[in-house]
Image 1 (tube, rainbow, N blue to C red):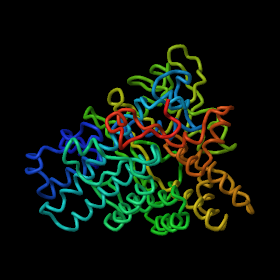
Image 2: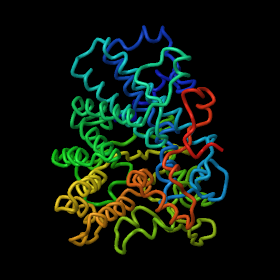
Image 3: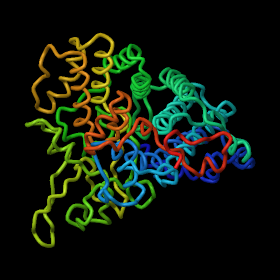
Image 4: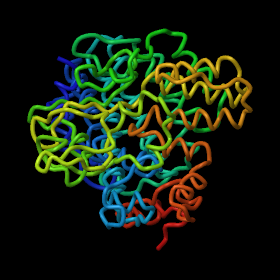
Length: 479
């Protein structure tokens, strides 16, 4: 029994406090008096905070749309349509887009859950060592969710305590992205001191010290503090807790979840309890019926583009593990050329109810970020080469040629991340982080579709309508 087995009941504890502007409505006072009293109560509250990550507005649906479908890696089947994910894919988003609305709301619901833990844990009767661990977990979760928000929307409200009234929730202003990043760094710096290196039994899947180190390294990389990024990512490497699995294909079977390459995954569990994932249903080719997925719909989302397929070098072992170029129709017996990803295969218990976790951080990501940071600091030295070549070796590819320039090495890392981490929610934010999103995406579209303001998404119109004084639209989206 792992963390995902006990998430459902814990979520119910917080469900009554999830409505309104930021979904930060106050928890009923009677519930507060009768809860958060001891270690068992606080563990339920922390577990509920983890459960929020699986919501549709977070990793259950919205995240892969804003992070992968938005990029040149993947697409939605209805390329010219007006569905919310097709609008996002084609850079035709308005502020009324439903995906960004639910991402905003559900992510703040998750932040509420973390804030609730942090506000109440001081008064609970419990062992102090466990209290400190729970604080570290809550601060890690809050940091991860603010990281996703600030990368997606830019300036966002920075709410650091449980909201006590509706008026308070409706009046939160956007804060500068720099202040949000400062809080993320503070949360992760504290979390890495409080979290253990690993867990056993029911606690497998909770945030570890290595996960906090790696996420902090990614935050520093995103903010351009390359020396700190290199140092923090090096801590993960030298700790020796994680390693690349020998076989890239071993990463994806659901039976091998939370493996030694995994630093942090969002946990899902099928079985009719509401905690299963919909990735394999959503990612199967549209109109494939039961030829690819045997139970439920085939969504045609997060499909590989021609650009991604062409990005794999000849002989790259990851290509045939990561994607199929088509399928055999089980009615006609004919082959249908309709590419889709193979990374999230499972037989669902019911439609949209599978065991696939979402990989947030894994060791290959750490190595490639380290190579990027080391190159930014000192150019492509031996350590940077060693990190990227370890990833390439597993892919059955030759080492990078020696003597690359700093710019050429940076592009090599970008390419390696594109194919190593394809479909996993990194590509769009990688392009924005390196300032390459306009050039790469306009080459992808073969025309001037993307502009600099598209680096962030529009603020949901519902939030502007509620709080027009504190929340104004991002430039470029006032139409």
